[in-house]
Image 1 (spheres, rainbow, N blue to C red):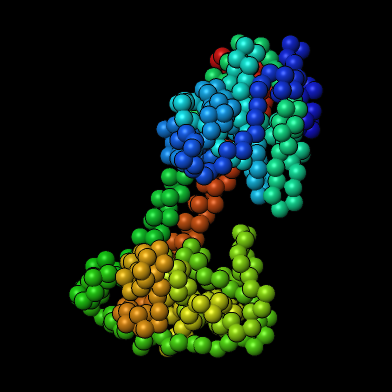
Image 2 (tube, helix red, strand yellow):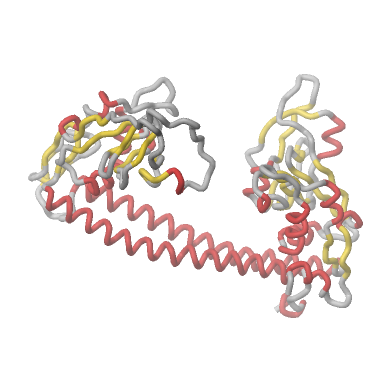
Length: 429
């Protein structure tokens, strides 16, 4: 059945009514600026609604000002529903949040619309679930206008068709969905915790392996470095200048594969990134790098934005490229770049006036000291970490698939409940 057809297949005692017949609604134009001749307020903004199913003055809200007329028009009351009205993506509009508490200075912010149900005809919690359901969300998505930024016309909000059972049934549906979605949300949260534990376990394994090796019983010696601590007695310590040399080859055409460096993924093709990233029209003079070169994002190195390149390409001239002298395997160096102790040490060597804009220059990098295990042991460490990583990725993939199914079930359950596909006796069971 087509999603919108669900509204034409409602139970016999239900109605399908336009939102404007049972609600007041308004599109906000209160800006985020403060003016001396206006009243201080707390704004419920786009991200507050997008990230939370329930909103209230308890959230960390933006402080701004508004006129008395704006406060009277856009004040949020308990039972109101706020939706995202504008976004860069069409499927991020119409996202609702329920107002569960209020205060005199709590008002609806910019790029949002608020909907106030007629409390005699429509329960606010039921309205919130309607706005979450696919038939209503799809109506708003189809009416969204724009090319690079999408917005819901005010008239489309009022024209959206809602399923309307009796007021008692509305409350029963809202109670049922509150209970069922809380159960599903708890399952999703548990799986998210498991994913976080998997990532933490992998990070701990990498840090342990590149600083202590794989044998927990091996004799240790002081490294003389706070970040490294004790290391196996047969490992060496070398300055980075003895392990790497600067590569400063420049592209004559700028036509090679453009690479980028992130603290999450290391060195990857820019074309793999799904988010917008600035790209210069002319990349002549960009730095060349080759497989196994170490690439450091000079500005974000303190966050771990560095890694070993898996392929040839060009990178921003603001980055630095280092050629290995063969003491460290590229795979081992990549693991070292992903280890928390090493990133913390990079942070210490980075320089800058502001902590958020530190830079790691070659002269500082070359003064850093790196652990040098024997080559065969480096290979064993890489192999062990890759083996554990494969198991972790398989488990993470299974968890993510399970979470996706739970979210699909949650969405389907909401749609089924607000369109009368679930029997009221099943809700009462």
